[in-house]
Image (cartoon, rainbow, N blue to C red):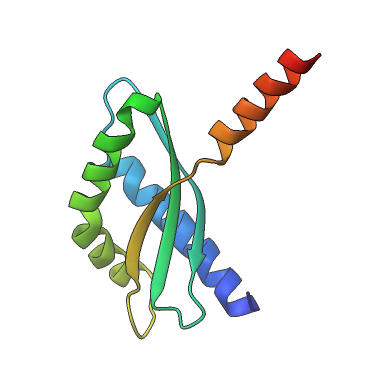
Length: 109
């Protein structure tokens, strides 16, 4: 990832996080953006997120899809680029995997 991509990814991460804090409502759960990756051509943005409890994941993903158009409009108004990237939401499984590994290690002791 070049410097421009890193800078844009960081800016998108911040902008997406603020937008979702204001517009995504999760009853009895928490949500966080864990990482944002932008493609080499700057036209595609992958937004990785985590949800707790796990039972809320599907609801959150549906809500994110519903907010996609509004979020792209918000990104266009906040970040001046030639094109607004398409958005893809991806559930970040890394925390779950870490907890599973930790659990397995404890059982092995």
